[in-house]
Structures are given as C-alpha cells and as structure tokens.
Image (cartoon, rainbow, N blue to C red; front, side, top):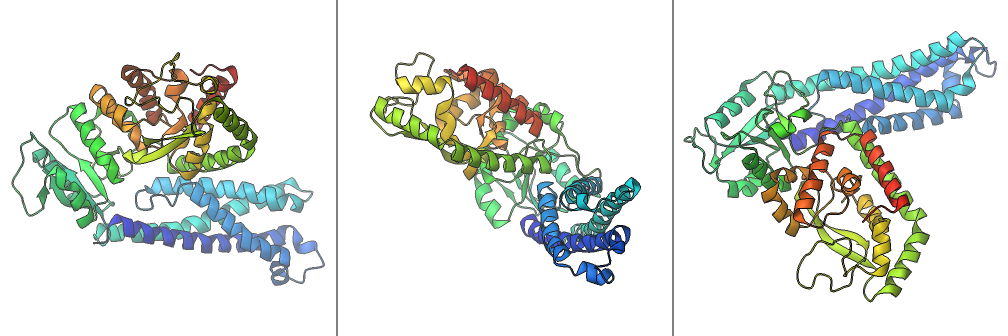
Amino acid sequence: MIGRTVSERIQRIWYVVTDWVTANLAFVLFNAARYVLVNHHDLDFDGLVHYLDTPKLIAEQIIIPIVMLGVYALSGYYNRPLERSRLQELVTTFSSSFFNTFLIYLALLTNDQIVHRTTNWLMILILLGCLFGCTYFGRIILTQVSRRRLIRHEWGINTLVIGNSEAARRVATNLTTSRSTLGYKVVGFVEIEGENSLPGDGTPVIGFEEIPAAVRKWEVDQFVIATETRDEDSILDIVYRLFPFNLSIKIQPDTLSIITSSIRLQDIYGEPLVDLASPAMSEGAKNIKRLSDIVISAGALFMLMPVYAILALWVRKDSKGPVFYRQERIGRHRRPFNIIKFRTMRTDAEKDGPRLSSENDPRITRSGRFMRKYRLDELPQFWNVLKGDMSLVGPRPERSFFINRIIPKAPFYGLVHQVRPGITSWGMVKYGYASTVDEMVRRARYDLIYLANMSVSVDLKILIHTVKTVITGKGK
C-alpha cells in the first residue's frame, strides 16, 4: 500500500495537469462561442480558425489557463486531494469557476460588449458553463479513480492508534472495516500508562517513547487518539506531545468537549473524527490567510524602511547593545524559531534568568518604553511572517520556559500550536502584555476562542483593533 504522502503528491500532480488541460479546452470552446456571438460580423476574420489563430487570442490562451490554475490553488482544492467530499468538490469547483468567469469578463470581455444586453449575459453564462463543465468533468473522473484505489487499499492513510485498550481496538476496527473511502490502514497501537492494555493480535504494540522510530519506520501519516480516559487534561497532554511530528492528530468528537464546536464532517460513512493539528478553517481560507501574510509583510518591510532606520538609530543611541533582539520562541507544531524585535531592554535584563516584564519595569529603556506603548518594537516581526515562522494574526508565541509553567495550570494551552503564532492576536487586543504566568493563562483563553472561530474576517477585525491600539498608544 502506498502511504498518503506519496499518493497525495501523485493525485495533486494529476489534478493540476487535468485542470490545465480542461482550462485550455474550456477557453477554446468559449472563444468559438465568442466568435459566433460577437465577431462573426468582423470582415477581417476569414472563419473561426483564422479568429482563434490571432496573436491576441493565442496570448490569452496561454495566460488565462495559468491564471485559472492560480485561482484553483488559492481555493484550496490542491491542499488535501484525498480528503474531500464530493459535495465539497462540487461547491469548490463551481465557486472557483464563477470567480474565474468574473476575472475573465473584467479583463477581456468588456471590450466585446454589443448593443443587446441579453447577448452579454449569454456570453457570461456560456463562459461559466464551459469553465465549470470541463473542469468538473476532469476532476470527477480523477476523484473516482482515486476512490477506487483507496477502497482497494492500493493507496491508504497509515494510522498509528494512540491507545491499546478495548476502546482503541474498536476504533481501529471501525476505521478499517467501515464504508469509508479514505483507506485507513492501522500500522500499530501505542500503550498508554494506566490503561488496560490488550495482548497483541499481530499488529505491533509500542510504548509512547517508541513513536519517533515508528513514525519513520512505518511512514505514519496520522495519529488517532482512542483512549479509555475522558479526562481532558490527560488527552491534551497526549496531543501536546504529538504536535512536533507535524502529522494529523485525530480524535473522536465526544472525547474532548473543548473542541467539539470545531467538528467538520468529511466522510459520512467513516468514523467521525476531529483533526486537532489543523484549525477549523477551510483550505481556501488558509491559503488566503497565508497569501495575505506574504503580501502585507513584504509591503510593510519595504514601506517601513525609513521607520526602521529611525528606530534603529534611536535604539543604538539610547543604550549600549544590539539594535535587534532575537529570542527563541515556540511556533506551529511546537517548532522553535527565533523571533526578532527592536531591543527595548538593557542587555543584562535577564542575567538572573527569564523574567516577564511589567508596565513600570526598570529594565526597559527610554526608547523601549515608547516603542512598547505603540507596539513599534514588533515591526521587525514582519520578517518572521514573510519567512513563514509567524502570521499577522495568531496566538502570541511564548518561550519554552514559560510554556512549561503554563501547561500545568492550563493544559488547553497546547492547542494554540495548531497554527502559526501571530504578531498580534485576540489575546493581545483584549488583554495586552502579561506580567505573570496567571495573566498569560487568562490571555491564552482568548486565543483558544480564536482557534474555534478562525476566519479571514476575524483576522481583519483583529488587525483593525491592533492598528487602533498602535495609533492611540494603548499598548503596555
């Protein structure tokens, strides 16, 4: 059986190639209709072939399909090619075809308008019909082929079940024997301390410490948590320990009530599972969020260069030490990265160990106090966003030192590592900087609510409130 990583790569390539072919076919068919409806009165063209062979249409034929592929990619269609319902496929294909129709009409067809308005509407409907019909026909054929491969177990999702109790075996049986078209293959079970472990039935049983080796050896694609316990703190501890593997972490929705509001049902025949390693956000919205991060951060880095220069000179003149301050923080899936900020404290600020700052902290420099008030010290983090370490909006990244003190008080905090941390967050907008671990816990609750309600519109609201905070100088 071929695992998900390889099978997804193969399927993604086939979808892209097929979409390119059908996009070309759809545009040729539309141009034929376009000739009949608009251009057949033009005496410069000696028939349809001559019309299609003009330099203008040849250029359009090259450029338009490429633009259409960009829209398809942005819609999230290629993100997870094996985990999508037929309804999802239909809706995504229609919405992206509709958007492409709108773009083509604005870019190319406004000059083709003729006196009769009904003809203009007919052209738009024909274009939409060609784009949707050709694209959906190609996609549904590929989808049916991939489903057959999954059902025959030629392709599959190598699954490591966390648990070895009767409940875990029951979940494993449901995964492999249901009418699901996702092709689950259980490669092993993981014993959980304190649970009643069952004897092996031929499928390997390992301890938690053996997971790293098992992931490499069995090419594990996802974890499914199936424990006897319903204690949320214990389950969240397991989730937190699995995040660094950068794999899907799924769980039955009745096992962890803290995230049941984020359930997105993808396979009505299979075991209902919630993915804890990915936020409750559509694939298209994720792509738009990341594209916005890249465009805005690149623009900000370029446009704010004079501001960076002024602040750098001020920091250098105000106190001895480097202009920028780099510190290791924990990001998505618990991966460490170096955050970059303008230095706002003395260089010996943590000579006695990590400490949180307070509003009247004597370690803060004069320039640092001003920059903190207007959040200007955060501006270099646009570089972190551009690199992909951070996002414009997301939970505030913390250091391991403080995370290890937050987790015992609030095990739910580990869920913030589903997403990239942000320059700003709902917690920062509503609560501001935290000076104690208890305040960090209270602020983290806003980030948890954000995870359950992530959307492009919510991000926009948070950014607007952040700009308001910067302008009014209400940062601490």
